[in-house]
Structure formats: structure tokens, C-alpha cells
Amino acid sequence: MDTKIIRTDPEHIDPAAMREAGRILKEGGLVAFPTETVYGLGGNALDERASGKIYAAKGRPSDNPLIVHIAETDALFQIIEEVPKKAMAMAEAFWPGPLTMIFRKNDKVPLATTGGLSSVAVRMPSHPVALALIREGGGFVAAPSANTSGRPSPTTADHVKEDLSGKIDMILDGGPVGIGLESTIVDFTEETPTILRPGYINREMMEKVIGPVRTDPGLIAADSAVRPKAPGMKYRHYAPKAEMTVVEGEEKAVQEKIRQLAAEKIRQGLRVGIIATDESAPFYPEGIVKSIGARSCEESIARHLYSVLREFDQCGADCIFSEAFDTPQMGRAIMNRLLKAAGHHKIQA
Ligand code: TXA
Ligand code: MG
Image (tube, rainbow, N blue to C red; front, top):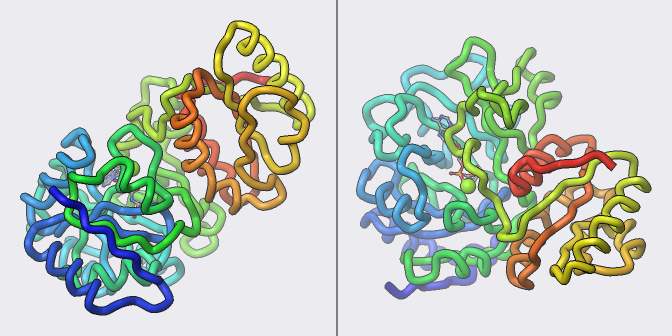
């Protein structure tokens, strides 16, 4: 299949292009599109054949449910049984935006979209191209991140092209995304709202709106017997091809440790990648050193994380050492993705 790529300026959306993309969705086809978090691979969420195509294009296990994207709050009432009061307060505070909420679904949503679950994940993105596409495409767009299953999520249209060209109908190229990490997921089918995936909107921000929020025990204890509740969180994904190690500890000690580890591997003839920051990059004398962003600006770290992992794939690194990032707002989200990329391999400096 030929994948049509259309450049769409988020500030000046071309209505004809959006109509064409919307028609593809209504006819059961697939369109990749930018959101404020990562690029999504969209299909009609109410059409089980379209959901099937999404799983096939990504090579995604069929038990891993999709997020349904909507453009108006009204749409929520059409696909779920009941909206808890706290969820309404969250929608008012954070939608449109990088927040996904899980509810009990009604019969309108096919099980093929929810990986066989009786619950459904719903999100209203804030990206103007995403909102326009959802409206043109019938109002309910199932969209996982637009990467091949197991690869880092795409933060540019080129990443999507790398993974999905020839497998989907269209890519809407709206430039690089703003946040760079997938949305925060909160489960409202539990007694206490529960974070299943950390993101830009953190626990403290949510607790200011609705009171106590817990974190899924399966997320914290990565190597324990407790399974994460979001099926997608159990896979080792976001993964680069190289073996990766995250080094934690005091900043200077971390740099020293990475210098030593890198030197050893380089002596063994391996290609070594180092994930550093603008501040620390000059302190690494050897290896392929890439700055992920400025330690003083956590947004820049989140925004570049996945593209740096992809770059290391491209330059054929055998192993990667990364500094840890314990930043104030998104620290948990950043470390969650890094540790997943590293298969939870971390050491203390
Ligand atoms: O920012 C985002 O959320 C992006 C953009 C495109 O919106 N989408 C995204 O989708 O990250 P995906 O499919 O890559 O990740 C969805 C995650 C998976 O871990 C999946 O298991 C979980 O959400 N999930 C979806 N529905 C669920 C449900 N009903 N119960 C538990 N987990 C669910
Ligand atoms: Mg994903």
C-alpha cells in the first residue's frame, strides 16, 4: 500500500486535507497523526475491522487495549456506562490534554478495540490536528502510539514513516510533538483512582483536583510478581536494540561511573552510547555521547528521550549508559520510560 504523507501546519489547518483524512477513517482505513504527547495511529474505534488493522500494522499483541480519542466531552457519555464525579472534575481540569481515563465501557465500543476488556481508555488530546481529525473521522478514534510494537514511540512524522510506511493509508505530518512522552493513564474503575502509567500530569497535580490518587503497585515493583494493570506496561518496550543501563546517584558520581563503564566496553571493542545532558556532555571524553536536553529544563529531556533512543539504534550502538533523571514534575514518567527501555537494568554510582 502507498502511504500518503500530508504536511499540515497546526496553526493553519487545511480543511480539505482533514476531510480526506477523515474519509479514510470513516471507510475503515488508518491515519497517523500528531498529538501533544506522541504521534498516534488512528482508526475508527467503533469499527472492529479498523481496530484489527491497527494491531496488524503495529504487530501489537491483541490483548493490549487501545485508547479511544474524542474531541468533545459529550462523546464520553456515548461510550461509557457512568462518569464518576471525580472523573468529570479531572476532565474539566485537564482536557483537552495529556490525560487518559479508564471507565467501564458500554456495547458501542467493540471488544476488538479494548483487547477483550470490559473497560475502555478515553482521552481528549489538545493538538489542533488531532482534534480536527477526530471530528472529521466520526468522533471516536482508536489510537495507540504510531510505532512498531516494541520500538520507541514516535515524536516526529519521520519516526512514523520509519516504522509504518507502506502499512497505513496516510500520515499527517504536523511537525515534532510538544511533550514527547505518552499521556498519564488513570483508572476510574477502582475504588481509589489509580495511575497505570505516569506522564506529564503527575499525581500531585491530580490530587489537587480530586484528592487521594494511588499508583498501580505493578508499576512500582517492576520485577515483582505483581502485574501492571495496563497490559501495555508489562512489555519491555520503548526499547532500543542496544543493551541499556541506567546509572543512578549523585551527579558527579554518576558521570564518573559512566566514564569508567564506557571505557571498559570500548576496550572490549564495543560501540558505546552515552545519554548525557547539555550540562554533562562535555565531561565524557569517549563513546557516542548524545545530549538528551538540559537538566535545568525537564521538558527538553522528555521531548528528546524517544528520538535519542532511535538515534542510538541507527548508529548501531551495542550498549548504552544513561544518567538517571529525577526531575520535579515529570521525573517519574521519564524514569518509567528509561527503565523500561533498559529492561529495568539500573545500577548505583
Ligand atoms: O499519549 C498517548 O496516550 C498516546 C497518544 C497517541 O494519544 N497513545 C498511547 O497509546 O500511548 P498506546 O496504545 O501506545 O498505550 C496505551 C496504554 C497501553 O499500555 C494499554 O495497555 C493501556 O494504555 N490501556 C488501554 N486501555 C486500557 C484499559 N481498558 N485498561 C487498562 N489499560 C489500558
Ligand atoms: Mg505505545
